Image 1 (cartoon, rainbow, N blue to C red):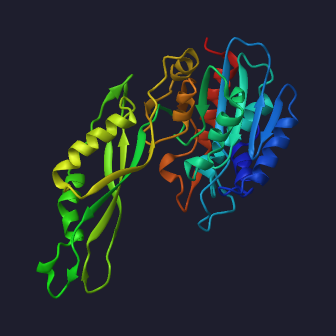
Image 2 (cartoon, helix red, strand yellow; image 1 turned 180 degrees about the vertical axis):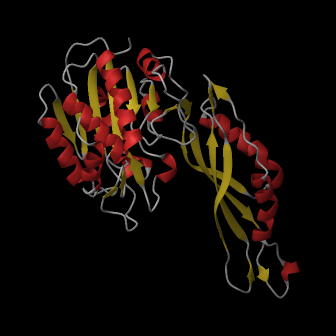
Image 3 (spheres, one colour; image 1 turned 90 degrees about the horizontal axis):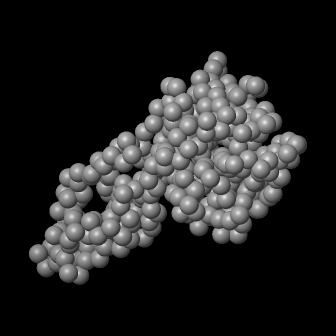
Length: 355
């Protein structure tokens, strides 16, 4: 096995901020095309490589090529057993593991599909996995999938849904010298914010994994002028809901929660939503991964493209070497131990199959 720290650093040094993944896609395509037994296809800046060995199972290993913009961390730096740099955790370390598997595993017990896709860190309409699902769904056919999202080398099963809502409350303009002539829309946000701040989300346990629902105010827009009582205020909310709830059910619950502090002329609008995915660890391939000695399993509290695979009918989980708390951090980094542990777990699954 090559040095996974060095391989991660090599990928970090190929800039791939969202919408600018071509150089990294070129690198990945060239690497995969050199491997015998892999049929490689390119769709935009999405690269798919597949074996066709006639195995009874097909496992998909998927990861995104893009990173968030640099924060004085665009170049890799190796210090001891740690590599620092943009995307090291999210998720070039995971990509390095996948490329290592493609290089070294010559006789897998399962057929493999490697999917390296663009634009995961930006609006959903740009997502490369979604583009592949729409244009070439046959390339994403498989029995199970593993995303290399940063998990610290533990399995994060399923994912929560996410919903963005905007509450617009209405007031009446007036001069600030005579505020009793108007109704201050910003002040009207007070009771609404109290309800949001006091929200206690459910913590359901699904297939042994505990999810945690949350509701947060993330933006406020208001104000007309320095001497005008504002007649409108907009509060943006983000809601994370467990995967045992469909988006419409989650929306109904929020509307019920907020209705007592919204007036007849106020509006609550869902502006973006993506459903979650239940844990799928009952699938033989993912079950074998979860049974590996020393493997830890927990719920994925964020949203990932596991949900896209769920829509396609492909059970999926998250497993990657990066630390999720360091994703997008100025000192983004990954250590050797979780890199090696992730590679060992995936190589064992690929070589042995579901056992």
